[in-house]
Image (cartoon, rainbow over all chains, first blue to last red; front, side, top):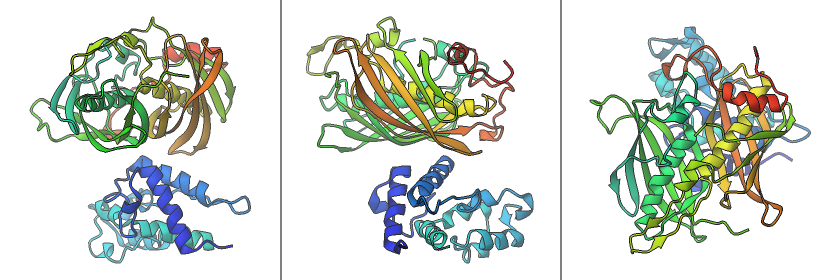
Length: 134
Length: 136
Length: 176
């Protein structure tokens, strides 16, 4: 039976509360992982491991590949970033590989250091929903 | 070594504390952690934060409170001999079971001329202190 | 004080589980300060009360789990503690007691590893093991990019002082 959006949101909230030590009330859809919830790079790994555990079933394992969830991990190729800004090639890659991250605002001023601010709790829920439905 | 991981309190109330721990090559355990690359062990950052939190609780008439739980504690920059760990703890809440929850953070201070309010984060998370429990 | 917070490995299942013990003794200096006799604010005197600091119990688990993680790549990688996900220490440990750290490798990839461990303690007084707590840790692989620091070539994380422990457990470091 497919998970409802509400169930996904509740599970994602549990994961973030455990991984980041934040209160349930802080985990709102618009909260950014890095800015509002204080996530750091080791936390991203913790979140990936926990999501895999939370959403895997014996019939359908939930495995997250490198660069599939967090956009920063995609920006390792030098051709994707020029003078601190993500290139057109980089933007196209983001749209293709991490569609759960809304880059429509980011595109206007694509400073790579600002990229994490577009990753919200909603981005995480969208990712899980899409992947579970696949 | 002497098991005191706080050298000087800059602020101490019954709800929060700011203190410093100097790291010096004179601390012998550094020879093992690590050979050729001495850095303050992460658990000694936890101990420093715990000792600061203990002092806050002592102000409330609760001496010898010990570390009972740690939650979401992340490590960042290293602290090396000649550098200083500035620890800050603030009491978030007291629990029904007699434990106290602290928000805790340590930053690295390097360079004597540096502004002591600046610094990279060495450690941050939550510590929960409780009374001693040695009964079986 | 030597920076060695486990004494002996008792179980090793490669890539899965490692169990180590640590004996707690009054011969350890820090126990005489944790806690020494003290005078409280209201004038009462508290007698000395030697108990193992929880931070050092945490280190015992970190060393146990760290060896388990490091062994997967024959100790070629510098494995360091990156996060204490959660830790509970429900009882305090007295001199004469023995701690047991039972660590399991949960997940590992190129970025790092996560481990779960159970701590319990043995006492000659009641001749029994009793639960102490549960510790979840995350380790990352140190590399040259970490804060722009240059590291010495050799793997200083699993240095000489670990050699006796590793040899006793039938583990060897790469290149040794």
